[in-house]
Every structure is written in structure tokens, then in C-alpha cells.
Amino acid sequence: MQNPGTATPETVTPESAPPERFPAQDRFADGAQYIAGRPAKGTSGRTHAVVDPATGEEVYTYDLAGADDVDAAVAAAREAFPAWSAATPGERSDALHRFAAVIAERAEEFARAESLQCGKPLKLTREFDVPGTIDNTAFFAGAARHLQGQSAGEYSGDHTSYVRREPIGVVGSIAPWNYPLQMAAWKILPAIAAGNTIVLKPAELTPLTSLLFAQAATDAGIPDGVVNIVTGTGKEAGEHLVGHPDVAMTSFTGSTAVGRRVAEIATGTVKRIHLELGGKAPFVVFDDADLEAAVHGAVAGALINTGQDCTAATRAYVQRPLYEAFVERTAALMESVRLGDPFAPGTDLGPLISHVQRDRVAGFVDRARAYARVVTGGAAPKGALENGAYYLPTLVADAAQDSEIVQSELFGPVLVVLPFDSDDEGIRLANDTPYGLAASAWSRDVYRANRATREIKAGCVWVNDHIPIISEMPHGGYKASGFGKDMSAYSFDEYTQIKHVMFDNTAVARKDWHRTIFGDR
Ligand code: NAD
Image (cartoon, rainbow, N blue to C red; front, top):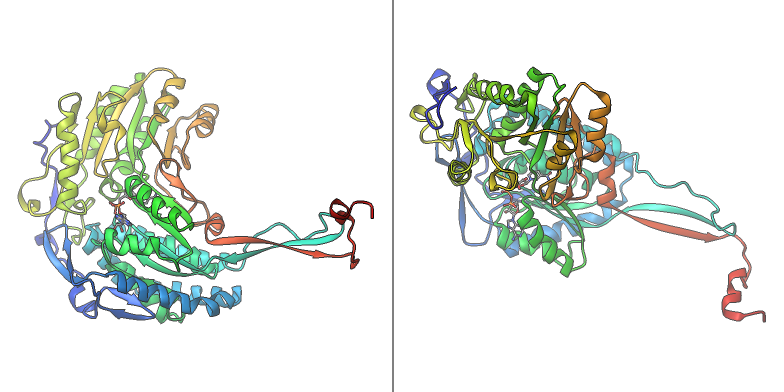
């Protein structure tokens, strides 16, 4: 094991395989807005540069959206709503099946664009982001035909009641930069499958794959105006979209701090709100766990997407008998992970999204040196990767439960490990942050693991694994991680409203219940 800041992991440099990057400037020469089925330039008068975080080079400069562009996108979505909401579930399903096929044909283009703007290794975008999005699209194509509700019936005796599950209208969605393609998919697919139309604002740093996604929707035959993209700042385009009177619902994925602001604005205009916010997932290892499995799970679960994953393993609580061995083996395994150029074949781990984010993460680790042990990592790598926003996989041990590195969301390749004694203590510590998005429990004792799944307050609890998601199951938070569900049939609860329809069956003028008004006359 190496000292903090001096680890020199194997690196994969661009020279080992000249990377073929995505030609963003040419591909999106017509602008980074997508309104009514066409690309357009933003009219805010300000520009923004997409930076390749692996090199620090600007790869695409575009005109940011202003309020006028948001208005135009909302108007297009409003115009498309009557016909799209009146399409049969079968017609919407067919369109989504074609949409999935178009994305599949363009899978490599999606993967390269996502790798370029986020710094994700191609291995990750090809094997996770893009196939996950295709699967999600296919799932919602099927789910569009299976909207559920209570069965019709004569619940009062004198009436027939049934529910209609109806779309809400124009949805305004805001997405973060960590999984731009998947977040666009998670927002857009259930909304349009249920008959809504949508305006999505991706993060300023990562507009490329949302634009490809909207273009693919058009090419699949989804009518103009059903899917619109506005790429502007949160303050300007984002707040205007959330407060827009013609937007019936806001769905937001991002940090808890911004989620609070979004909720305030949306509440002012009495909109439905769906918030997917930050996380600080605990990873609880009981003393009967398979240590090797837990160590591999911790490293993969903490480093996925360079730790910029709202469900990433961030706090490992390890029962005392396994603690030292866990720390030692996790650090060793972290040091074997190969940092490198996202487009080079052997790369395991890319840079963070930006130098600002890298420096923010480094700040947390540097401050932690005063009260904890940085076991490995804790620095940016030197040499060939120096210009990128890289940070070494980092393990921090012996921090106090109330320290900032245990309590705050870092969003970087950093795992903190703490010991615990009793099962009660492990579960209590797991629940002891404001967040509740995801968690995992590691044990070979079914009763222990089952207790953890019941008592940990999080929207997802894995047993003996950490990270996998599937289209059929819901994703969403407890506590300060927000509310509402993405993916799965449960997401239709967010993107539809329920109407009770009640028919009188008596055909009499004076109904029995009228006696409350007319007395016994
Ligand atoms: P962020 O909150 O800074 O930004 C998210 C989006 O909000 C961006 O598009 C941004 O432009 C916009 N925004 C910023 N200020 C705004 C405002 N005042 N009004 C309206 N919109 C505004 O988050 P980020 O840094 O892009 O992403 C990282 C965060 O996202 C982390 O906290 C992570 O946990 C969270 N996240 C959560 C989930 C989930 O499913 N719960 C998934 C992915 C990411």
C-alpha cells in the first residue's frame, strides 16, 4: 500500500490506442436547442463550452438558451400535446419501439458522445449507459400499453365508478451531468409513454447525448414537439422552465440544494413535482460476509462512473473483526484500477466531469487529513494524465461519523470506511445522514440481511451487491434524496393523474342521498 498522494497506478495513455473522439462541433453546428423537431441556436446572447474532461480541451461551443427559447419549446410541447395524448397506447408503444431501434442503430455514436462530454471510459458507455437506455426505451414501449388502475365497479351500489389515468400535460424536466443520456431517458420515456409532451433541460456541461436522443425520437417518427431540449443555465433557462405557467409538472434530478430551490419555484405555481436528489449510500459489511465479495463490491460500487453516481458506495461500515482486512484489501484493489484516456481500450476509470469538481473532491480529502487516515489515493495523478480532471481512487479510514467526509455528498472516487460493533450500531450509522437513496448489506446470514433491508431507510437496498439497476424496478429516494420514482411501472404514478368517473345507475330524479338536503319532504 502506498502513502497518500504518492500512489502511481498503472495508467493508460492516449498513445497506446489513438482515440477516435466524437465530432461534436460538426454534428451540432445548428445549435444545442431542439425545438419542434429541429435543432436551433439559443438566443440568450451567451455561449457555453463543452470541455473534454480528459484533456481540458473545449470540444463544442454553443449558444445558451434564454427565456425565449424555453417559451418556444414549451409552446411546441403544448401544441403537440392534444394529438400525442389522444394517440392510442398501441400507437405510442409502436413509436417507442421504433425509437429503441433507432438508438440501437446509433449505439456507437451515443457511446462516443457520452464518453467525450463526461470522460466516461468507452467500456462503460458501451456496456452500461447506452444498452441501459435502449432497454429502458423498449421497457416503456411495452409499459405504455399497461397503465394500471383499480377495476371499475359499483362501489356505492347505485353508481358505476372507474378511474381514468390521464397524462398531465407539458412536463418540464431538468437533468444532471453525471449520466446525461440515462437521465434524459429516465425523464423523457415515462412522460411520453403516458401521453405527455416534454421540455428537458440537460446540464450545461453535457448537452450532447440529450440532443442525439431527441433527434432519434424524431427519426423514429415521434411527432415534432413531443420531445424538446433547451440547453441553458439552471438560473436562467432552468428557473424559467420550472416557473412556466404552461408547464404542468416539474421533474428534477440533481443535487438536494438545487432541488429545494426548484421545489420552491414549482410550489409557487402549484405544479406536480418529482425530485430525484443526492445520495450518500452506506455499504454495511457484517462479520459473516464473504470478505472478497465485499471488497470487490466496494471498489466497483465506489468507483463506478468515477464515483459520480448518486447511488455509489460512499460509506463502508465494516464490523470490527473484518475491519482491518477490509481496509487493507480494498486499498490494494483500488490501486490496481487503471486510470486513463476514456477512449483507450484498457481504461477502467476516467476523469471527473471537470477540474472544478476534481478540486472540490480533493478539498474534502485534504481537509480529512486533519481527522482521518488517507489510506491510498488522495491526489491527482502526475504525468500523461496531468491535463485531465483525474483523481486517484481514494480510501479514507477512521473518520468520525459526524465529520463532513462521512456526512456530505462528494461525488468523486472516494470511499470512507468506518468500523462498527453490534448489528444495531451498523444499521443506526447507515441511517445517520440526511440522505436515503440507496444502500447495501453484506452478509451470508439471511436473517441479518433481511433485517438490514427492512431497517435501512433508502429507496433501494441491495444484498451482497451494490449498483445494479433494472428497467422493471423503481429508482428513487427517501428523506433528503427526494421523492417519486424513475424507471418501472411506478414512474407512471408521477407522470399521470388519476380521474374518478362516477355514473349514476338509478335514473331517478330524487336520489336517496338527497335527503341530506331535502329532509323527509
Ligand atoms: P445540480 O443540482 O447542480 O444541477 C442539476 C441540474 O439543475 C442542471 O441541469 C443545472 O443546470 C440545473 N440547475 C441548477 N440550478 C438551477 C436552478 N436554480 N433552477 C433550476 N435548475 C437549476 O446537480 P449536478 O451537479 O448536475 O449533478 C449531481 C447531483 O445530481 C448529485 O447531487 C447527485 O446525487 C444528483 N443525482 C441524483 C440522481 C437520483 O436519481 N437521485 C441521479 C443522478 C444525479
